Amino acid sequence: MALRILTIETSCDETAAAVVTDQLEVLASVVASQDQLHERFHGVVPEIAARAHVERILPVIDEALRRANIKLNDLDGIAVANTPGLAGSLLVGVTAAKALCVATGKPLLAVNHLHAHIYACQIALHRNIFPCIGFIVSGGHTHLYHCASATAFHYLGGTIDDAAGEAFDKIAAMLGLPYPGGPSVSKAATAGNARKHAFPRPFLRDRNRLAFSFSGLKTAVRYAIAGTGKVDFQSLQLTAQQIADVAASFQAAVVDCLVGKAMLAIDQTRMSRLCVGGGVAANTVFRERLAETCQQNGIELHIAPLQLCTDNAIMGGLAIEHLKAGRLETLDLDVLPGLVRGS
Ligand code: KG4
Ligand code: ZN
Image 1 (cartoon, rainbow, N blue to C red):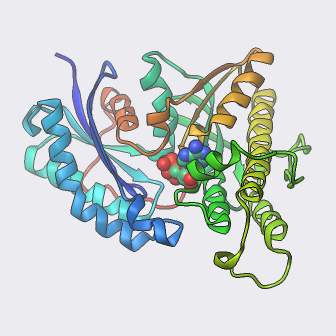
Image 2: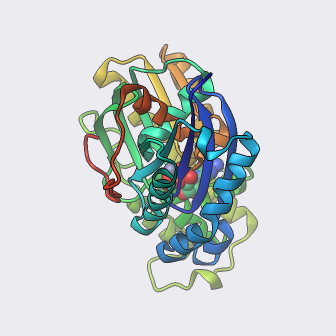
């Protein structure tokens, strides 16, 4: 009989649970999104996120177990993302997982949310993707790793300010587009001219630095749509074409930086396999450009399928690796909200 684990994910604003086997089969997956709660703030409000997790966590777990047709007592382990993320949000998942482990005596497993975003590629492919360069492009992180194995990640470089997804969300707010900004900016961009605005591409030509910076790009967009004076973005009267052109030019700048640095990481490490995950990896232009560039350079590319790019609990199947290696946690498992460099 295959090993079966329950995985819990509450690192940001998705309350999610899944049941995954050691053959990486997904028996059930439930994701309760909080987008509607955060929409009017154009970003995730940590306290609202934590409270919403408290309300949703038990129904989400129950539903995942029901769909997988499995009882708590038949599980082989309970896994939870405990780092990185919002402290209050992580605490809800970690507390739920611990409580279930106390009640059932099942092993407790911990998952690094960023490693899980890369492991989503392995779950989708059903075969080993390691060693590889792992590229996480999400709302909170834009990070490149050398991944020797599913559990041995070495940090190579990342953003020095905003994450790519965060930049999409902030630009959407300026343009009056709905939250989350990634999907709405990329939708608007389809009707735009990506060459209309020459937005900056920080560090792109610097072959020595594996770094990203998206906050200057945000300022450049602000100047392009509202000049340098004081501005109330809600009262800006932009035409649909102006919005589309800014969205397309912004997206082109972000994609140039992401693709350029992913290739630099490949060059610097002489690796030949690139695996990409995180919400921004759902972006069509990014996926196409990366696929084209990797094909031209003979790089094996795996991007998480769309439904595994944004936060979900399926990717927590990474915990199967810990279970097999006997890396079990004790009940004093803590949340680590900040990123632990090199891990
Ligand atoms: O991985 P994720 O669900 O959460 C974090 O771990 O941060 O990523 C969410 C981010 C948001 O910033 C959202 O705007 C962005 O992913 N995103 C996109 C797209 N879909 C989601 N960004 C660009 N294009 C998209 N299609
Ligand atoms: Zn994420």
